Image 1 (cartoon, rainbow, N blue to C red):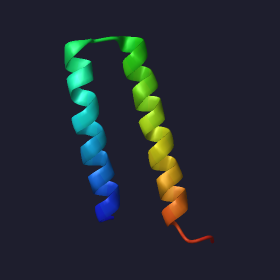
Image 2: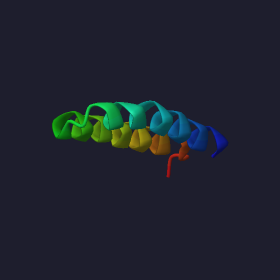
Image 3: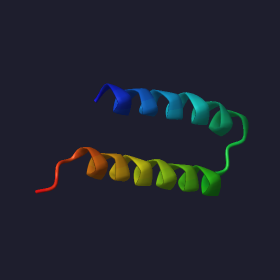
Image 4: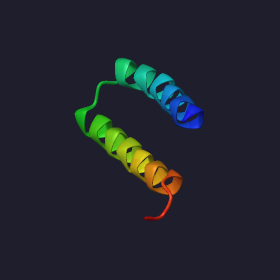
Amino acid sequence: MAVFKGVMTVASDGIMPIISSKPNTLLLLIIIAIIIAIIIAMIIGFMPPA
């Protein structure tokens, strides 16, 4: 799960300055949706098939 944690850290570091400099609710929601989709895809990818 080190890779997962690393991706999350990079994502938050890259996104937070954007949110701070240009607060835009719609953009923020889109970014969050993309992150959630990536996380779900990663979880599905790492989980062995049942």
